[in-house]
Length: 248
Image (cartoon, rainbow, N blue to C red):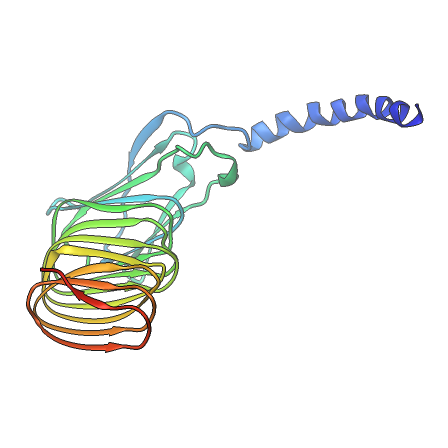
């Protein structure tokens, strides 16, 4: 009976605290939804690299008209920060209480231009192209990315790097020379990306597929298998259970 009495005694105090905290949380944005989806054009200085953070999707269009647009809920737009430093466009979601949002919210950044040769990827958003991206050299460097990078790409040199986490790189197109470093849980789906020469350092636990026509130098140093299309001259080093497997 004493325990029940104590609970009854404290109930009014708890209700008072809740009635004070809930409006304060709403005012600070804790229980605020994303809002109606809007688009905002952003003026930025020149850049040739994009650094992508947080759960933000990046959509690239190869076009001579240079344009950067943010698409997000009205309550989130002001928290999507784009800064250019050292010719790098750095994209961040600085909104508060990201953990409290509905999981189906979407933030997109659209970039239209021709001068871009590197993407550095830390986020959970996805990256894709709307047409074929063309460059002399193009590098995708994923540090802690956990989304999918799906691009149509034509270049003389492609650098594909997955350092940690489980990024998934899916390319179509062609490259004269491709350099690959893939570790952790990374995957590559390059069966439609034709490379003349490929050098590969492969340390992933998962399997990947590549397409090589002239020369393949492959080091497979962990459990993941590498499947390859084409009939290149092959030089391989296998230091674990992972295999290099020809696809007829």
